[in-house]
Image 1 (cartoon, protein in one colour):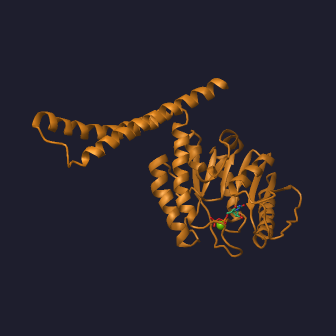
Image 2 (cartoon, helix red, strand yellow):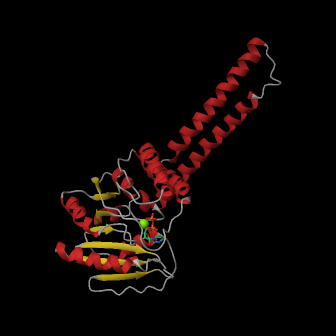
Image 3 (tube, protein in one colour):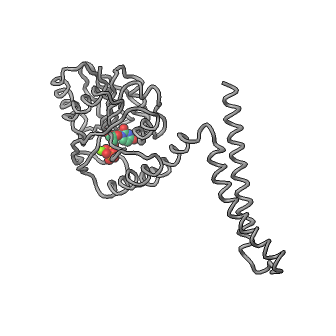
Length: 293
Ligand code: UDP
Ligand code: MG
């Protein structure tokens, strides 16, 4: 069975249209399905009229798209899970392509809005994210990680739980965990009704999210590897500065007043040691946490 999870926040014009088109498309596909509409605390008084095979989940207040997807997944029963936006920007006619790819054996299939119909304030940060940051930190191959349209096997979400905003990097995380992933080009339409729920501040937050996700994924179990390397690097720079100054003072009789670099050296050594120590505290936390379990 296919579970289609659609989070929505104030999409009163788009959602009913999408719902009808979706049902028409799914009827053509002749697969068993359920549609899970997740109302993320909408305030526009839309009460979707649901037909059979549909579950409506409601958040009492807006909790964000990530939580909405997680609530939808909790209610779902399908072995193929599909995420789709409610704003009619994603095209239900692409569903069959997603399902075909999953049936080919992929665990996750991400959409790629090659011809994206959004404003530059959205596409530019998104390009930086996809083509620079994610490549750098994750070695990600995805062109459009943040595309809301994606399909995956149930096992993927059972293993990698949705929390916070990690849905944004789900494909990269899933890939890093060794699942078989791919992407397909999808149709993309301009938003015709309502307004986008995300501004461009998302760009900066997106950067912080990349860092956190990368850190948690890579160093969660062994913080000293991260803090140790960073701390040792800073310590080493300070140490070399002090070493050179020391040699100059002892062997060449050069005096150390009016040498501001002396303070740079001292500060770097202290910071380096502090960072390494944070790594040990991190290790201690991991150790105690594991022992308790
Ligand atoms: N959405 C949501 N809760 C939020 C923000 C967005 O459920 O807090 C839904 C929104 O209704 C839409 C999808 O997530 O169905 C994608 O949002 P939007 O189209 O505004 O994002 P964009 O495509 O502009 O990045
Ligand atoms: Mg949209």
